[in-house]
Amino acid sequence: MTVRTFTIIFMLFLTSCASTDHVSRSYSEFLEDHDHRTSKRTVVFFLIDGFSLRLATRELNNGRLPQIKKYFVNGKKGFNVARTTFPSLTYPAITSLLTRSPIDQNEIFGNIILSDNKIYNFESPTNYSQLNKIIQGKNIFSYLQAQGLKAVSLDFAFHSDASAHMQKKDADAALAILGKDYSYLDTKLIRSLEILLSDTAYSQWPDFIFIHLVGLDFISHESGPDSLNAAKYLRHLDAELESVFTILNQAEKSKKRDVIAMMSSDHGFDQKVSRNVNISKAFEHIAPDVEVINEGRFAGLYFPSYWDPERRSSFLQSLVANQNIDIVAEKINNSISIKSHQLETQILYGSGTCHDSAYTIAIVPGPKQILRAQSPIWMCPDQLEPQLNNLYYPYFLSHLSHYFQSPGHPDAVVISKSGVAFESVGAGQHGGPTTQEVFVPLFLHNLTLAPSAPTPALWQLLNFL
Ligand SMILES: [Zn+2]
Image 1 (cartoon, rainbow, N blue to C red):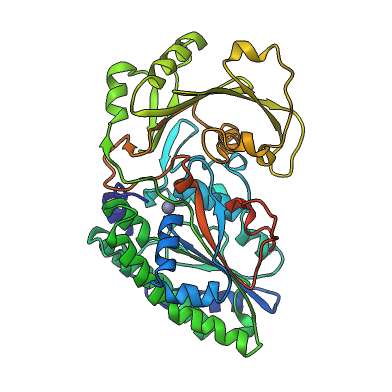
Image 2: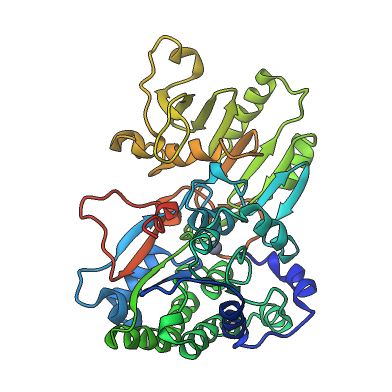
């Protein structure tokens, strides 16, 4: 989420009050009204929005996250690392996680999408119903429910198919955001979880619980991801979570419930914003007929049909030369052309099926004219050899190949240089491909990754369910 959200949230939520026992009550109603299986295990996924690897490492090493350390690290060497996708934005990332699929298998390729010629900005709660409609029937909640299991969502936005979830309209939450009282929101989520677990018999606990804490992201946008404010807020969350960890530990100790817990994030953060360049305004002058979806850290472009490939190409070439721009990528027919100041690469799409995609790719260095002479080597996008996997940024080519297969994707994307924002976003931003935006901490309780396993993508984390 970004600061843009505030004004819109105000209108939406101002309809009713929700208490912290709402989820618990609606869960017990669900149990009464639905046939369900009883099981022995609960999986809890804690998603701390915008929890960067840098902040996690620093705070943990300095002993400032005692509860997270005690519950998750507990004598182990440290924590694992997961990767989000490109774009490293909240809605694509959480959709990927919950649908257990890369972004090309759903329509949520940005916080803002174009669908049926209509723009939906998911940072506006007025579009939450569209968001939930898109993921309906193909997410972890619906998957578990189809098996007679129970899944609860403690998230103000994502709730499709959950057995119980936060109330959709919450006036107190709206006012808290306007007043920048983010801890109110997270405390409400944490208390709701605490009450749900305390009021429900162990044997009836949900099989899966998703909790999405939002305050750290808001504060990191405002004050910067490495700011004292962000660190202090994280420490506050750590203390708030103690009560939940205690309840989970009691369940395990009493041997009445197996508990698996995971804590991760939807994205990290780019370095502190040092320059603002309003790309939307610039395009009004240089190319008013190009539709721009401005995500702050990058922009998606839709060209008018009367722009021929040469015109597009020379226009994009002029953008690459700009000092504020890092990478420009364009999809033309069955290939993606990627340009930075130093490097030019093509991704070709081929037939063939991989575990996570219905296509293969080949990476060809240099401009398009050269590649014709070479015979491409087809590979699975998520299994590139290390050298290709680290071209531009880690996993970038893989993530970009998924991005440009997503329904409704833009014709091209323009990514700013790290530290440059395409709109006034405050001190922090994310959405780009850098290491600090893409890699996120992954804490595991009663779960381990195979020692040689590659860095898991968010969309793979819930595959064991
Ligand atoms: Zn986020």
